[in-house]
Length: 329
Ligand SMILES: NC(=O)C1=CN([C@@H]2O[C@H](COP(=O)(O)OP(=O)(O)OC[C@H]3O[C@@H](n4cnc5c(N)ncnc54)[C@H](O)[C@@H]3O)[C@@H](O)[C@H]2O)C=CC1
Ligand SMILES: NCC(=O)COP(=O)(O)O
Image (cartoon, rainbow, N blue to C red):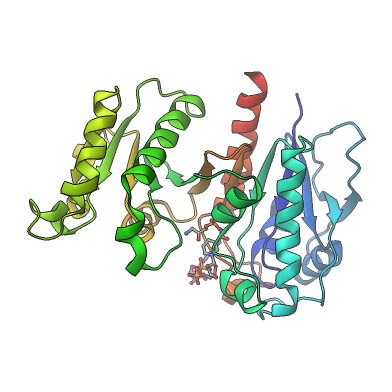
């Protein structure tokens, strides 16, 4: 069965378009539909000296595998032409519109998954649109109250209890309800999406040394341990809370199906140190499959042809893999 995958290249001044054009030089076992401005892709392909034939996307046509050097295009007009490496807030609404269409069309079943390239959160906000990330945006657009950001590389999966919020708000955001919901979604998706029958999840503490019995912070005693005890009594295999500074060692990781970190910069630096360029970001709990890259817009590399395609490639492959499994079930 051939599947149809929506791809949003993200910020037009960043490396997302470059990476998509580079990856379109090969044949894919799925139909890849870029939701983007075709003029941007043609202009960037010329800048990178790569051939690109854009084929108008028609959802009523039969789904065929992607041929090398081609991309299907669902046209969304930019407000102004993009210059590689130079952000322009005039295109903030365009970026959001590509995400909105991708979400809507996935909800309607036109696509089997969404793969997103990197967006620049700052320039979207500068354009007057409140935006903290794809994860939160897709949750809101699909009316999903709780979703989980998980990044995965060979040998390590890291999921986050909180995502794109200021550090000052993290403690308050780690409520028993949120921790329970995140752990349930992670546990469920490790079973359903990754075929792990009884997932073992290692849980980080929030405070240094996991609070040192309340002497260095109390969230472990008031929230994390009681919630974990409840979930363990319901049958989950949870270990922790362990001090985050010593959790990420093979002794634990060799027996872990995932690590649950309390906040963005607790878990992701370790994941990216291990596998930057070879990691994929997967949103768990959404009503559709969504994968993404492990990196940002890398404006310093846009238009130069030197950006590493590894993570974008993995994001497309993982989306095809997850969507194929879902279709088979
Ligand atoms: N999936 C997404 O939409 C993501 C978006 N971002 C956004 O990207 C913007 C820039 O963020 P930064 O923190 O500067 O991170 P960044 O990932 O864009 O750049 C950090 C460093 O990594 C390098 N780098 C990034 N991707 C690379 C690649 N594919 N190949 C080779 N080198 C690469 C860059 O050249 C730079 O030196 C921010 O607005 C951030 O919010 C960040 C992460 C993910
Ligand atoms: N650090 C991950 C990141 O910024 C990408 O998040 P999202 O846009 O996929 O929600």
